[in-house]
Image (tube, rainbow, N blue to C red; front, side, top):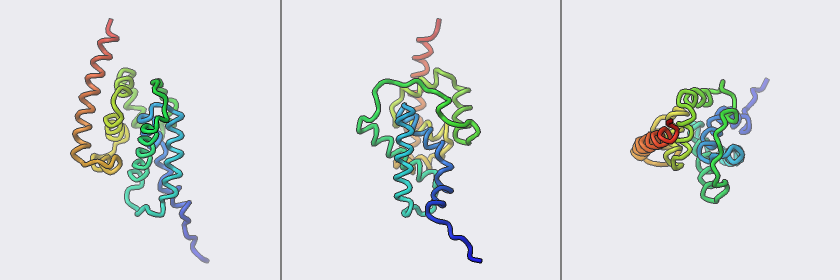
Amino acid sequence: MEASVPTETSTFEQLMLPHLDSAYNLSRWLLRDPHDAEDAVQDACLRAFRAFGGFRGADGRAWFLTIVRNVCYSHLRQGKRESLKVAFEEDLHGSPEDSGEANAQSWLEVKGELLRQALERLPPEYREVIVLHDVEGLSYREIAGVAEIPLGTVMSRLARGRGKLQAELASLSQNTSP
């Protein structure tokens, strides 16, 4: 009997497809539109599959999220998304049983609607590091790899992003106080 040799397609599916929820979550927060997020993830999957021959077996999640991030920023630069804000809809983020989505779901439930609104108001570069760290649980080093920025920039963006998030929360809280 001859042992079956895994094909590139099956290896890609085993290594990348488990990260689709994280990819969609990042894409959804960056693009703020569920349809654009789905399109971006689909585009990222295609790009990742085409480039999979160059994947050297490092961290598949970080490699795939880097591609997703780049696709999202390309969409933003090209004006592919509408400028209107779209209300966040938790049911569009997939199954709460998935690890990334479970983290996102519990994080969102604890923080509430004001936090979602405040996070939506942040510039993409701050929103991205907060989502990757606080929602997806990536380390600073993993975020640096995904975002292709120095480790110090990750830390400063996270700190500044959290400061801006607090300011937005304060502003939103004042507007909703009786």
